[in-house]
Length: 69
Image (cartoon, rainbow, N blue to C red):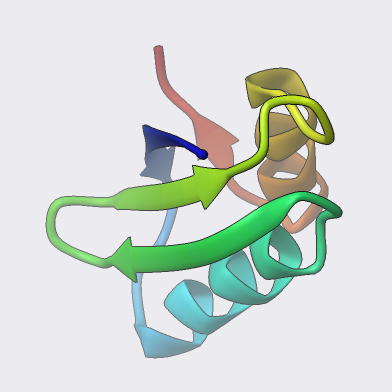
């Protein structure tokens, strides 16, 4: 398993945190997700054979937020 920290921009409340957690957790290969409002980030443990950073970033964007570098 691999771990990545994605900087997530645009989260303003607990509902935003829940939304990001939900979309990332739904991806195949994602084992666990911890999202924090301050700083805005998502720590994801995942199987690199099933999902990559681009797919995770796209899921966050599709949920209405943006991902930093």
